[in-house]
Amino acid sequence: MNVAVCDDQLDYLNLIQKKIIECFHEPEMELNVYTFSTIQDMLNSTRFRCYEFAFIEMKVEKDRGIEAAYRLRKLNRACQVVFISDQYYHIHEAFAVKAREYLLKPIDTKQFQSVFDYLMDWYLHQNVKFVIPIRELGRKRIFNVDEIKYFETYYNDLEIVTVDDQHFMAHVKNRYKLRPVLKSRWFMQVNQSVLVNMKCIDFLTDRNVILKSREVFPTSRKTLFQNHLLFEKFLKEQEEKELLKNGESKN
Image (cartoon, rainbow, N blue to C red; front, side, top):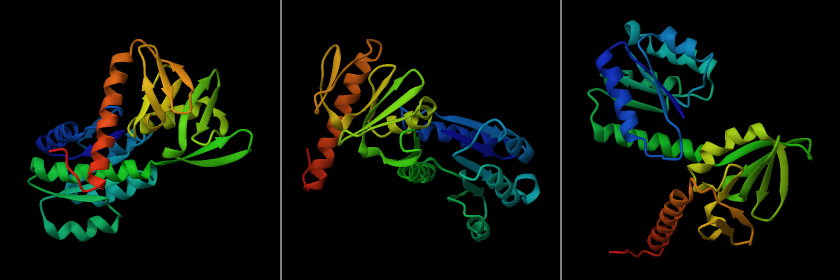
């Protein structure tokens, strides 16, 4: 996930970058935070990368924050803007450009954590569906995250297998779109070729991952210990969710 921060006050530029890193708790997603002290530098950077979020100071370069947001959204339409300001009266302007959130200075950790958690919840919710071009169909198909049992790569092909055992073939380049978000939603990288939905796993051995539907995948020795810990964490969270659903508590 790429995040841009634009502020011509160096202390706040560094502060926002630091707080983003501190508040980010998605171990299976890669976070890249890019800081800019000028609007043009931020806009120029869109030639090399896309941003999921941009934190923009409204007073940057003599109150040009709104303009910066408009221009950034034209170049990077999916980018969600978070405005930063020390004055309340700018709020209506922020939402005029469909800003996702608004941070008021001075920024404390609790306030920032609350806003950042909201942003991450929104981002992950938006990414529960994927539109993938399917070769046999000659068109695109929408997949829900919970619909995917696993996907496996073969040379230049990507096979997507659903929980009802439908098989779809796509180009291997699509794995780079799927992998980061799927990992953040309880998918396990079993080996170099296979990514499995943990809801579909029956159990793990020292050599294999066995699915409830009885498929068996050899696991990479490099990630064996990490995957066992990850699966334990997943099972614990599922148990806690079930207890909350039934109005119970472990304590």
